[in-house]
Image 1: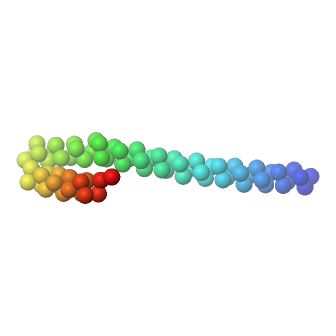
Image 2 (image 1 turned 180 degrees about the vertical axis):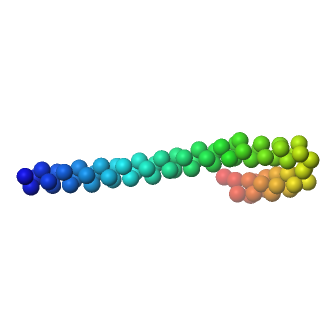
Image 3 (image 1 turned 45 degrees about the vertical axis):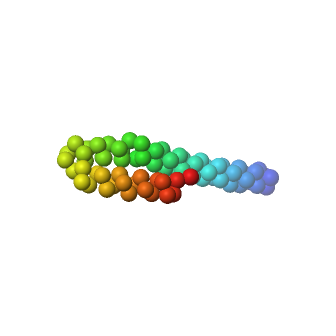
Length: 75
């Protein structure tokens, strides 16, 4: 009986550990997908809407700053 209880406890600990690892992996994957969506979809659409809306004096400095940061910090 004691062996069954120990096995049950080990199984529960292993199950919780694997569950925690899967939750962490899911959060990391969601964060990566969110970053890709913002960089490739959302930011260019915002810049295009700023230009179309007549706010090129706002869009151009943002684009220059982001470009300089990309050049200086790029890998």
